[in-house]
Amino acid sequence: MKCDLCEQQPAVIHVTELREDPEAPPGPAGTIVEEQHLCQSCAKGIDLPYVAVESPMVDIWKLLQSGAAKSDPGAVACPDCGWTLADVRSKGRLGCPRDYEVFSGHIEDLLERIHGATEHRGRRPGQAEPEPDPHAELNGLREQLADAILAEEYERAAELRDRLHALERDAGQKA
Picture (tube, rainbow, N blue to C red):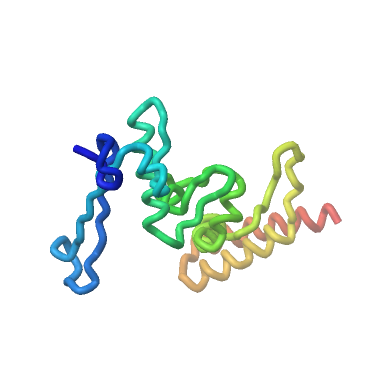
């Protein structure tokens, strides 16, 4: 098979593009399939996502990655690790620390649900464990106690009350 553009060299790159026909109903029947058969030099000249390497599997992988990014015009990729939002979603983790900034608009709600905050709290590497704030713990126990009483969980409420009294006693002795 000869190249569709130059019609001289053998076609070694075959591109299949699927698009939705705007005039047809959505679904497989409304899909337009366009095929292009190109030689390596013509493919480079029209800015296809093709990079010549030794392994054909790597070529396919790069084509798939680049094609996925081009198919979504709003696709943002991290400049450090190259991950896209699709990578983050499919792998369930981030590729590098900069991804927190790059994908912040997409992951803030998720971080809030998982961690209860969108900013780091707690110990950082190389630092000593921070002293617990007794007031924060007391306030948290008071909230839990109120919730237990409203839910009519009296056994749990009694346990929380006892822990609260013990912490208040300890705080009074330290002061």
